[in-house]
Image 1 (cartoon, rainbow, N blue to C red):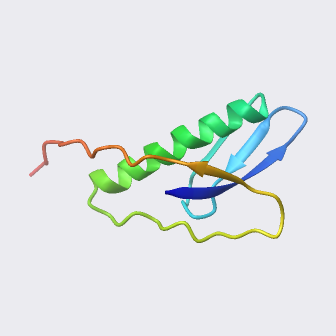
Image 2 (cartoon, one colour):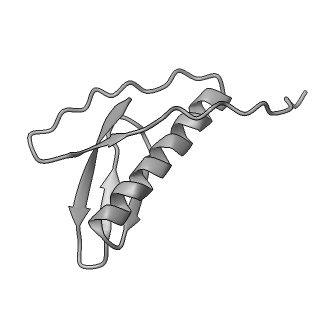
Length: 84
């Protein structure tokens, strides 16, 4: 699965947002680090959706500016004891 990430260079960092996954933000001190952090953030968010039995957000975002495709692998959902 591939999600497009918006990556913006500021004075302090490379900031990343993933429009298809609400709340998915991260950053890195270099572009390569920001891309690696984006992969980790996306996979973590997808795992959270799967663990809660929620549908995964589908990659739909298309941009008129340059984006960076982030290829991710769906991690296996963890079995968590359910609270009564």
